[in-house]
Image 1 (tube, rainbow, N blue to C red):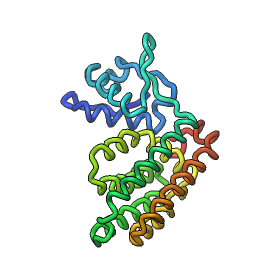
Image 2 (image 1 turned 90 degrees about the horizontal axis):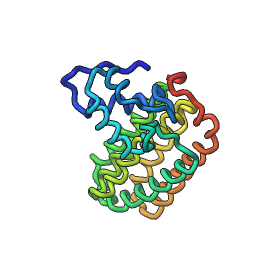
Image 3 (image 1 turned 135 degrees about the horizontal axis):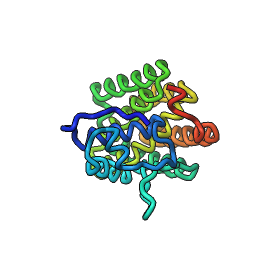
Image 4 (image 1 turned 180 degrees about the horizontal axis):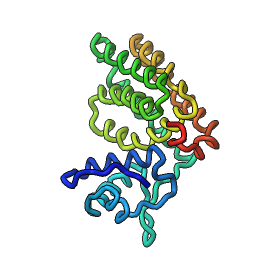
Length: 227
């Protein structure tokens, strides 16, 4: 195991970011045990900071705690994929319904177009991390336009798991999602709520189906080998 060594003055957020990235990029593989003392020594920080970061990742769904055994990296299942994309579809359709008045504003559409272009650019770089981040940044922008703090919080809660799935998908198929985001902007510009909601549902079902079709590969895929 090799983690980025941090300064002793670091914060829990820094520790959280390093461990989260280590899970997402495969340094900590699904099902592996996360030993606080070992991680603390590797990062040269206190076990308290590591414990706090791991507890946060339990909330994010990336880590599981088993009584008398310790903490382990979550192993996502096909059922998890279905639940994540069902929830994403529901939340994003509601968010767009609430945000619909904003899509008549040129600056909003310009931002959506810029974020869409970032997804395409990142996918063409064949960087799974960058592509997944750009993908979710586009959707997070739309979620934020809803103005509903509880909806935003619910979407943020599944971001880490969604990133894990998208990162592996982009690693196997670099162009898997990029073209879709151009279509998203076209739908936003049209401003037809019924068509927009149907589009979101279709896109989420399509991505879910692609992930499940590739699941034997994705579940065994080594992110580090594709980086």
